[in-house]
Image (cartoon, rainbow, N blue to C red):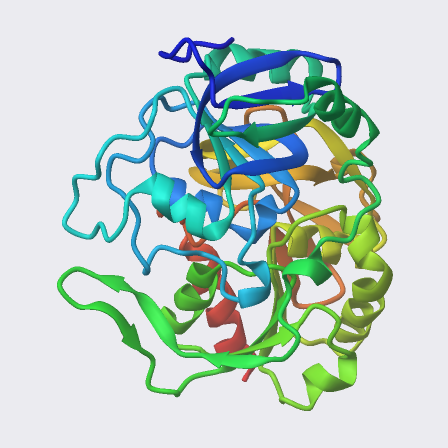
Length: 388
């Protein structure tokens, strides 16, 4: 799988089974351990690398040309400083070229170095992706050493001994310690990000690792947005008198995060507070309703996933990033399945029959990805207005 152009590699990826893949290093020097996944998106690499849902993971980009448009301060997705270190590493087919875009402020390698993200280029990413599809997401150690010196045995041992993501609550690591207000709306050509005027229904977002564009999309739909930490209590949330609550995306095992979040969500359900769950928030809502979640062999990571809305029969192309899924074959009687993946039939949406609560597994804010799913936010906000 190593296709580095130089005889002297400056980066290596060592998998738990002893597989060694050499390449050329970029970004930060050092090494990091994580779960190796792949992402099939052709755009939005900056948004992907800063998505807090990727905490604990090393991302393989299947698209061969990453870095062409550089990076900028506006396209960073982590809303909280606590989630600054999202992805642990990145794997590329080709070395990033000089950026060519009017919005570029920095080249990808320099930006990764500032954020502590380790990169390796010169890898046959399609072959690595095929391996992950066949055998599941391996544990691995990625290393960048400008001297070209690597302790491969120690790297393999570290990868083999790493506990992985199952049973790990990573939301607490990327969630802010204090709440805050967010008034920034979605990006508009020639205008950038405008501020919301502060009117409209008040939404409280529980931040398990929220993406900035989820907050922006809520503001664009006319909502006043407040964000609270992942461990906020029911009382903390209700003190803000929310018209509705959004359970955000985030990393890690939903069952582990659910130990403290599920009791809070159940109280919100009992209080009949309107709820929208996204990604990890979808899994949190499902667990609170009595459903179960499970680890996926390869997960869903990309911006080209077809999903069917069972309520309308329409198919939408969505952006996804998750390694756990709600068990759609054993949903409780009070839970209705609303969306399914057309790739593998897994559950991608639910609605509760006994409360104004629904959720989707994918990222409807479309960063990166198509805008097919903006209606999810409109559906939520329209429901709030009808209930007011």
